[in-house]
Image (cartoon, rainbow, N blue to C red; front, side):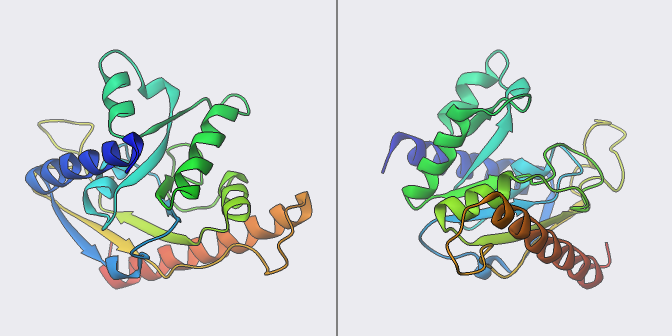
Length: 213
């Protein structure tokens, strides 16, 4: 096991302790995540808790692409130590791209917020990064809906949901982003992005209906 993979395993244990200790996650469909081999988990992003919540509830350790602004002070060595990847969103970050592809090449799980930044969390505006990683690596995508993290704020800690409140994490069916042709052209990337957006949006709608969130 590489240092990055072992770090992500430690990060998962920390995430389990924190998320289950502070909130009440309800995990649905975790069996849909392939038990081995490369996989990309695409998560809706409406709250800062979404990434840590997935790290603590996913059945496998997850390496997230995280904005470089989060790597400040003591958080920098900590995040690196638990296998997370720093990305500069203002440019084409070759180091981050290589790191993410290395995770997938080693059979690991890569976590991505395909909307790029925190927003409505409805997959309405996807960037091409997710399609690029999927087509380049051949890894299947598992859609993940984190629901309840942004519904209301704690009076004690306004930036977080109330402690011990329920947060639903719903995993969808894994799917291939490509059309089977193996093409990696700009047109193929655009077409894959449209397919991905349709699948992620459909999963989110199903998850909301199922959970009532």
